Image 1: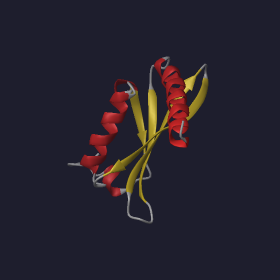
Image 2: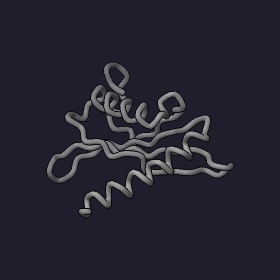
Image 3: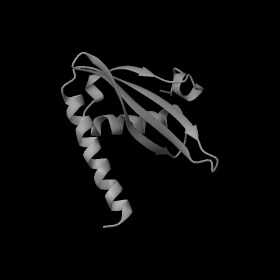
Image 4: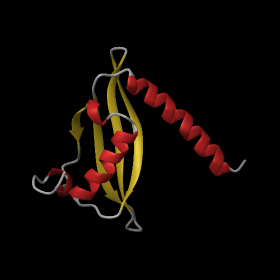
Length: 109
């Protein structure tokens, strides 16, 4: 088994644990941030926040590579991830750093 396979196996296990916790929640919130690294690779980080047994919980959910960093593209990728995790309908709040692509009204997120 290669290191990459081991990491993927661990990631699947952690993801399953997070999904089990989220299934028990009625509502969730997400925190998103779009950024570019030094190689100009555009990514979106997604953290999920929820209440677990009366205490707030926060987990890293996804790191999404983006083709473009406009609101429409961010929404497309974000909605796919939220649906994949089964939390799209539970989403009640979104927090961002206020970047223009995440806050414009028309044609944006």
